[in-house]
Length: 93
Image 1 (cartoon, rainbow, N blue to C red):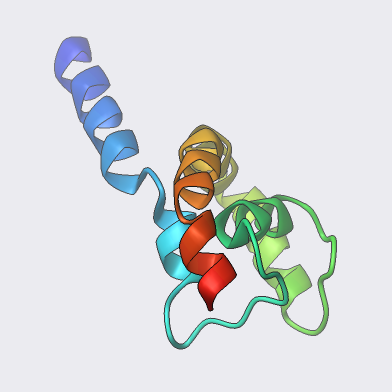
Image 2: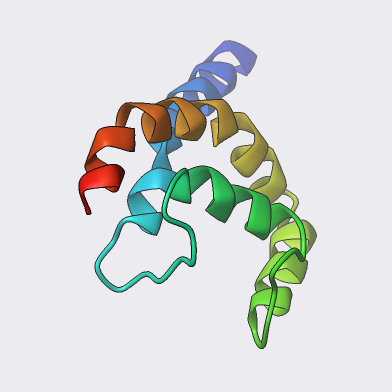
């Protein structure tokens, strides 16, 4: 049972890897950053840096959910790597 749960947790982490990068680059999303958008989105979700209006509530909800900070921290290296690969794309846009 524990082996099945741990494999499910690992598969979930892999499935969510890089989600900050893809969410930050969505057409409906607005970030004030030109480079490393996904990494900055994760950092803003974990801290209240740059939080205005309801953004602070999103951070509070993230910390109360307990899973959100763990996922954001676990996917932060993948988001940084994807943002590095996407630097030429960001520079052209």
